[in-house]
Length: 72
Image (cartoon, rainbow, N blue to C red; front, side, top):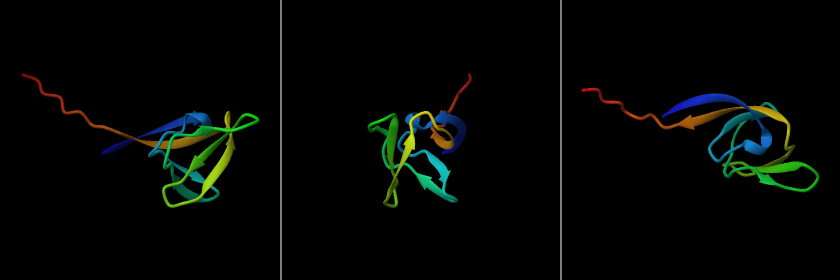
């Protein structure tokens, strides 16, 4: 599996995205969930969670599926 690096608003974090937060690499267990006052909640695969401003830009490494291309 390959990964693509993207700079996105925190509200667009998806399950499986990897990103650095507080000097640790985190992996999102689920898509970001809206909370009150323009924030989102992200749960991590190894436990724990973070609340971030929905518009906060964050660099994620997102798994992408490779598709085989056959030419004839």
